[in-house]
Amino acid sequence: MSAREVTSDAVGYVGPGLVVRGRVSGDGDLRCDGTLEGSVALEGALVVGGRVVGPVRARAVAVEGRLEGAVTAGELNVLAGGRLVGDVRATRIGLDDGGSIQGTVDMDVDLPLGEGDAR
Image (cartoon, rainbow, N blue to C red):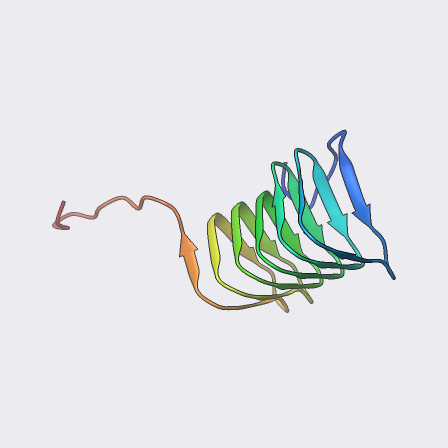
C-alpha cells in the first residue's frame, strides 16, 4: 500500500483550519489537510494535503501540499503541486510533474555493480 492509499483501520485526520503542535506518533495512517507543527513518527502512511513542519518518519509519505522537514520513509511520493523542503532518505521516490523537492536526496538502495566496477 502506498501513501496515496490510506486505508488502514487506524486512520487519523487533521482537517482544514486545524493546527496541531507537538509530537505525533502511532501505528496507523494519518492524513493532514490542516497544519501540523512538530515531529511525526508513524508505522503507517502520512498524506500531506495541507502543511507539515518538522521531521517525518513513516513507512510511506505522499506530499500533495507542503512539507518542511527531514523525511525518512520507505516510499516517498511528491505529487503535482506538492512541495518538500528538507533532506530525504527513502528507498523509493516518486516525483510527479509540478511537484518539487528542495534538499538532499539519499536513496537507501544497493545498486548492482557493473562489469569492471570495484567490489
